[in-house]
Structure formats: C-alpha cells, structure tokens
Amino acid sequence: MGNFAANEGLSIFVILVWLGINVFLFVHFYMAFLVERWFYTRVLLGHALSWARAPAACLNFNCMLILLPVCRNLLSLLRGTIQYCSRTAARQLDRNIAFHKLVAYMIAFHTAVHIIAHLFNFEYFMDAQLNRNSSLLPFILSEIGTGDNASFLNPIRTNETNPTIVMFTTIAGLTGVAITLALILIITSSMEVIRRSYFEVFWYTHHLFVIFFIGLVFHGFGRIVRGQTPTSLQTNNPEFCFDQFEDWGDVGSNCTVPVFAGNPPMTWKWVVGPMILYVCERLVRFYRSHQKVVVTKVVMHPSKTLELQMKKKGFRMEVGQYVFIQCPSISRLEWHPFTLTSAPEEDYFSAHIRIVGDWTQALYEACGGDKNETQDAWKLPKVAIDGPFGTASEDVFGYEVVMLVGAGIGVTPFASILKSVWYKRIQNNQDVFTKKIYFYWLCPETQAFEWFADLLQSLEAQMTEKDVTDFLSYNIYLTRWKETEAAHFRVHHEAENDPITGLKQKTLTKVGVFLCGPPQLGKSLEEQCLSHSEVDVKFIFNKENF
Image 1 (cartoon, rainbow, N blue to C red):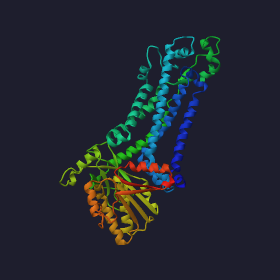
Image 2: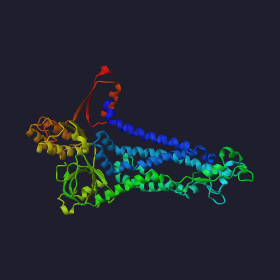
Image 3: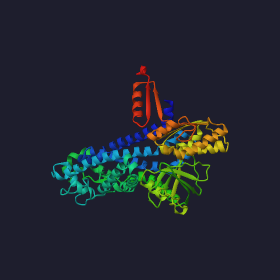
Image 4: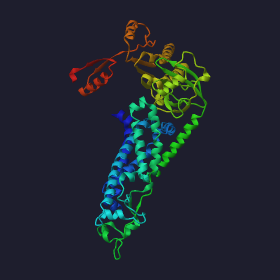
C-alpha cells in the first residue's frame, strides 16, 4: 500500500482535483442560472437552460487543459525543473497523453450534454412561437423585440421557420455544428485500432483541432441565450410582475416591458493562454525542423528494422529519451516518435525503426531497404528532428537496483541505457550509483534478437573481462517459434552459447507459473497466461489454498 501511494498517490490526487473542479463548475453554473435574472428565460426553457449552461462552463475549463499535455517542449522544461525537487512529481508528466485522453473524454461527455440540452431548448423556443396565444406568458416573451429586434428573448423570431434552419443560419448554430463534427472525427480516429493501422488518418484528423478551437472561440458571439438586464430588473421584478404580463408597459403599471441581453463571450478568456503556448510550441518545432540533420549511416537489421544514425549541431540527449522524425520527401506534415537507441557518450544519435505502416515502409524504401546494393549517402532522404524529449527512463541511474522489462521493439530505450552503462562503468571505469541491473526481454521472433544481441554480447564479454559479471543479469524469452527452429534449439541446447542470440545466457521458451494464493488471483493469472497461446505455460497451483 505504501508503494502504491508513493507511485500513484500524486496521479490520483491530480485526477481528483480535476474531477472536483469539473463538479464545482457544473454545480455552480447550474445554480447560477436559477436566479431571478434568468426567470423569464426559464419560463420558455425550464431547467434545460441550466443543463445547457453548466456543461458549457466545464467545456471551457477542459478546453483550456486539452492543449497543455501535448506541448512537448513545455513538458520537457517542467520535467527538468521538477525532477530536482521530486522524481515522483516529474514522472507524472510522462502520463501527459493519458491525461490528454481523459480531458478529451470529459469534453466529449459535456459536449453531448450541452447538445442534448440545446436541442430541447430550440424545441421550446419553437413551441413558444407556434402557440400564438396572447394569454400565455411564453408567447408574450417571444414577441418582445419584434420591432427593433434588439432586446429579444426568443432567438426564433417567426413561426414560419424551424429549428434546423435557425441552426444553420446563426453563428452559434454553424459553429456548434462545425465543433461537433470536428470532435466526432477527432475522437473516432483516435481509437486504438485506427491509430495503429491507419496512423495517417489519426494524424490528419487530429489537426481538425484548429477548426474546433476557432469554432469554440466564436460560438458565443451570437449571444442566443439571453437574460434580463440588471437595469430592467429594477423596473420589472419577475417575482411581482410575471403574472401581470398583460399590463406590462401600460400607463399606471408598475411593470415595464423587460429588456434582455446575452452574456458577452467568455470562452476566449479560458483558451487564449493555452492557445498562445501551443503556438509558441509549434514555432519552436518549426525552428527545429529547419536545423540541418545529417544521416551518417543506415543499417538494415533483420525483421525489417531500420537503424538511422544521425548528427545534428548542438544536439544533446540523455538515456531513454525520444525524438520526433519527419521525412519531407514522404510527408511534410507527419512527425513520428522514436526512442533514441544511442548513448549520450556517442558522437551520433540513432533510432531503430520497425517497419509496420505506410510511413515507415516509405522511409525503408527511401533508405534503400528494398534494394540489394548499398545506397549512396547523397541519395539518402533528408530528415528533420524535433527533440529530444524526456521520459521516466532518464531517472534510471538514480536507483541502486534497476529492473528493465522490454517486449519486442519496446526494448529500444534500454539499448541506450545499456550502452551508457558500458561507457560509464566498463570502458571509462566511472563510478555510478546503480549497482545492479536486471534486464528482461520478451520477443515473438528470433530475427528480432539479432540487432540487439551484438550489444549484449559486447557487454557480456567486457563484464567477464572486468570481472563484474554480477552487475547485469538478463533473461531473454522467445514467445513464438517455427518447428524447424524448435528442432535446432533442441539439438544445440547444450552448447555453451545460446543458439539464438550467441549469448552465454540461454533464451527461455517455457515458463512455469507457481501460485499459492486466493482463487481470484489464480483465475486472473490463468486468463492472462492463456491469452498468450504461443507461450508454453505450465500451471502448478497449490490446491490447498483454493
């Protein structure tokens, strides 16, 4: 419980504060539209008025937050500053995308509530115009402002129209439709299946946020939702005048015709700060994208993994950091994140790119990966680099004991860490705070081991030579193999070096799972293991505890 509080406590606190502010804003603005200024508006709309305005306030708050988690340079600056005070606090910034998604879900929720409430509102406005009975207060209120059209309460000014026409002929209606369509496209294209398989769709539709924010800023300029002015409240107090509406404005009446006005637009005040920060962020990215990057070497690794070794003036990195790479010859708009696999001590920086999509395939072909002959340096594509940006892996040397767990291509940040260890401790004999590293790597195919095995072999040999073999303990697991490979493994299993990686540490293909505990834990563990059918898993349970 103590470790959970230390690792997750701050995140939970931030989420609770964020949820608390949303609840406060919703309740506060819901109640704010129950006061007498909005009495006549509620005569037409009922509580749908508050149900529309409360989520609008929450939308302002969340739209203020949505851009901040994607300001990468701002987060890197904050991370570098905060980690001197608290590594735990700095690590929370690594969850920026998770928070970005939470805020997006909250925006979608409040947008839905806001739209549904306004659909009811427009029906109520229309009903007040259609029911043309001068003995009814809603009709009298709808007729106010008919002459000069200045102090109207009902935005539907005639009974010869319908809410759909009003929706597409008003600022609020047009911007509302644009905002909603942009939000639907952004959220649906952000689903995991689309983002993984059709990244370009996700990338381009996400830039509809520009339309979203433009529409958001201008949405309130029509001032469709209107309330009684403070001056009018002095000459027409709803508490005393609402049942005297037939005499409003008559000689001898104490109640004048009420005057209505809309609130001035407020959304821009919420979002202008984050929008300026984001513009500055994009300007920094634009400047970086025009700095010269030289691709010094291209290595085609097995399992369709491309290694780019690059140089850039003034580039400085730490272990575990990542960069965004753009290739203008493929697309001038797309930037893709890749973890750096080089060490800070090296005179270049590198990234290993697995070929899994259209963009990476195009980069693979542009670098000559589909050709047998070596690509000339001058024919290599130009690339632009934005970064580096920090992750939690930067803190690795701040712990005495470190456990590194990688799956497939997810091993890339640990290449940087292990290389840096080699330079610091083995080659340069530097004393580092870290005394022990446990490294676990799970990989689905034998070819994927090859590009990383060279590094591990070098480390293994150097540690043996320096008599520090206890510094790094590693276990490699192969989760899928062919029958021909299995036969080869069995034949060479007794060899000194592993037949797959060439390392002294053997690659493991069977996992024994032992459990002594409650049935719920056993069931959960069994489901998780059986979901990976390619792994030969042996279950050994202590039945006495079930």
